Length: 605
Image (cartoon, rainbow, N blue to C red; front, side):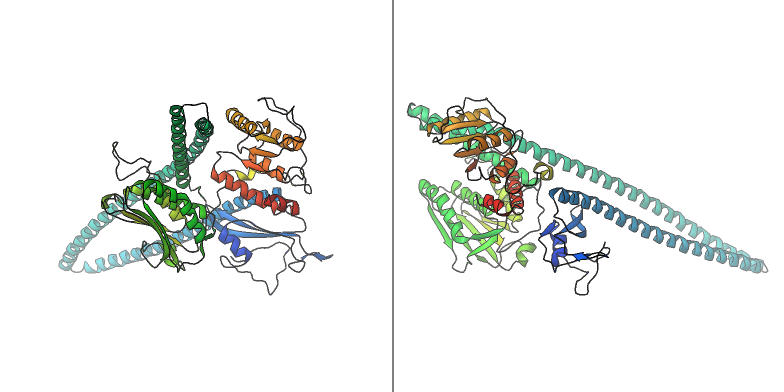
């Protein structure tokens, strides 16, 4: 990045005007492609001056100018006043427009350069034509001179005619070649336009599919959660026969399988749409081994299999990766190992690796160190011609309708994509009857350049600025959709506020809470639930995310920024997408960083 323009800025000798990617805040902003905001700037950092005086700014913001995901420029602004959320939103929209303008300027400059080249070529052609004209004139003079000798003239004319015929033949051939080249260029241009149109259609189709899958997963999982809770309650009931309890357990088990399938399809949809994020942090191997032990020890015992967790003594204390995604991959690999092993042993070995991965994997090749997680079993094994196929969605080694083992065939596909997101890969060593070894290779420290996925979060989560540590309360919206206990609550009662727009699910939660000695309040809108929380100050709150009136993240944010309600424990019960949940957490962290001690208290709550 090179400083090209400034406004009311005085250059200083000790301040650089060129920055490499990642160098300084300007280089870091260009590298991360994300806004950087500095608050409470030190007095000696920079001075804004005029003819009458000078003073340090209060805020500095560094903004990336992007076009199609590429950094085109960086804008750094200093202000005496704090930048509000409206300012920052305006800056984000403005830099997007600037990115388009800069790209247009670049294209225009390139067009002008090509035009100049074309003019130069035209001048050269004109010069050559003049030379040819002069040559023809000289040939005519020579022809007149050769007329002195008729015999010589005839001979030379014959030779000249032959030469002209050859030239004409070559000219015709060249003209045909030029026409063929022009025709092929037109075909290439048409094919390019068709490919671009298909790519745009594919992007739109992928977007619609992702939105449809997200909506359908919500619509499916909302009644499914109710069914699972009711089935669990039925299975635990004392007034049922053993057969009825068995039916209830079967319903619960089948519903759980269906919920797992929905979650896998949603994960696959997010991966295909590029919406799955990773959160890099320190993952300790002791914690990871405890997770594996806790999750699969009982599974091994139930199947009568030996189960071993082996950690190499040379391992470091931990690695920097996404713990939840790493656990998901290991869980898929181990679940498959137990699923396809009827006798013998299942083991997982964790150790540093020096090789074994694809030599074209640049991340692993350039990593300081690589960790290998090898899941080995003595199961049925996989034929060599099926090794590639089983990593494709909905594919299994035994794909017939009479196959012995169940499952959707999504686990390995999702695991492969997650491994790629983590900078690693999965290798398979298996043969029929000899068991299988799946090895996950991941770098010990990996921070990929990922864009944060934001689903219209800039407008959805826009909130008014906080006034001190309080937010002005909204008017109470009274509801009477369910027969709750709002008229019977005494000061000493334990109360639960249920904020849920699904009436059937809210009724189930209400009955379960009453069985445990709670008085219950029910709100089916976010704004009315917030008002009831402030009015009744319940002992606890269950909160849905996708609510009419005000979404759950806004309700949670306001609860935690109000002194009278920030102490109330809030339990989120929702089937909202994980990406929405991550977006909500990011937004709460960002607001907390600007809200002083009250926001810090809210974040800890």
